[in-house]
Image 1 (cartoon, rainbow over the protein chains, first blue to last red):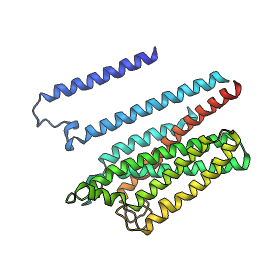
Image 2 (image 1 turned 45 degrees about the vertical axis):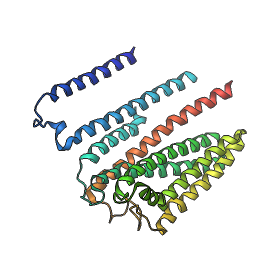
Image 3 (image 1 turned 60 degrees about the vertical axis):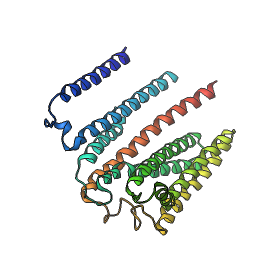
Image 4 (image 1 turned 180 degrees about the vertical axis):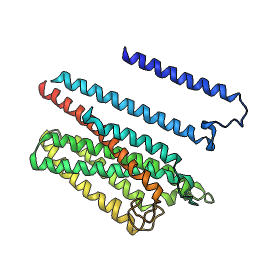
Length: 74
Length: 231
């Protein structure tokens, strides 16, 4: 149950982020907000942080699963 | 939760590395330009590899002193994560080199020829292949105690071979790779003070990530072994 809600939440967040992207693309190009300044370097940071976050969530979940296995083994 | 403080430290350091590594000030170098930021990622892979191999060889020596099979499992898993980090370092180095060393005036194959002749690359490939042989050796021996003992001895040899292949021989030969005169990225003359503030946390963060992955693998193989003994 917890897994399901977690996935649902992450899908929602991803959808919301992409909607924001669509809304901004209709605006004129001079509207340089944070994500579009400095040659859009913040977009790269967002991408790398997403990958890093995903990897870390994966590791934490593996860690918990192994802990559960260890508990049930004793 | 108290015992996992270093995992939280690892996450915090890695997030800091990405943000400060991409936004922080770097010296403007003609050849490298912004790619100098790869120092926080590519070089850290090799540092993490070296530290993981060191932990591995310590466990191998402890195995030979105590003949405790848990030590053998630890040595094996640290070596395998170390090789993984080394492969990542190799792959990132290949990307980095192809955009900074390759001469755009030459045809691609000529640049490729000069890059594959790099003593540092050959040395690193040798070191990784020697460790690859460690895993081949392990999986070719079925007797558990013999496997542990032979591979512990071989692990010490593999660790000793790291020094000529990645530390000594590349220093003696001309190379495009930076850090010819000293320790790359540790030498106080060739790394900017501002970059050091990101580089050291980055090394620690990536190393802790490697240790984290390794502890998971160790726990998993201990579970497997227990199951096998009970069956």
